[in-house]
Length: 94
Image (cartoon, rainbow, N blue to C red; front, side, top):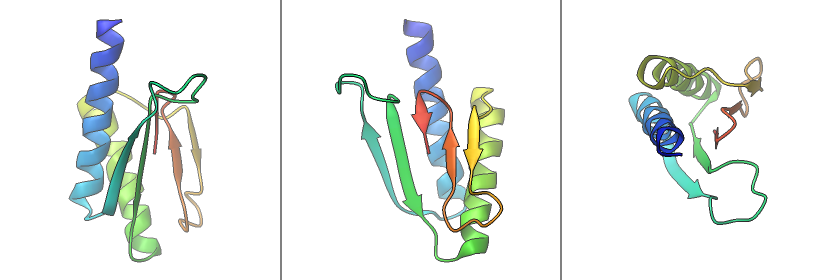
């Protein structure tokens, strides 16, 4: 349990660092652990000013999550259009 908790916390920190590196705005970290049957432990939401920035944020998150937490997303959506992007790491959804 502690190992999983540390892994989730490391991933969350890496994701937020990736967002900040590309100047993602209005970062929201929503803890869902206390919600019964929640789909994840955390939701992390932010936005960018334009499509290239949104794409850069997603790429930065993917890189930081891999480098700092050794995690690859289970599922990715929206990368082609980059109007919105979803990165699903199971315990953490961005």
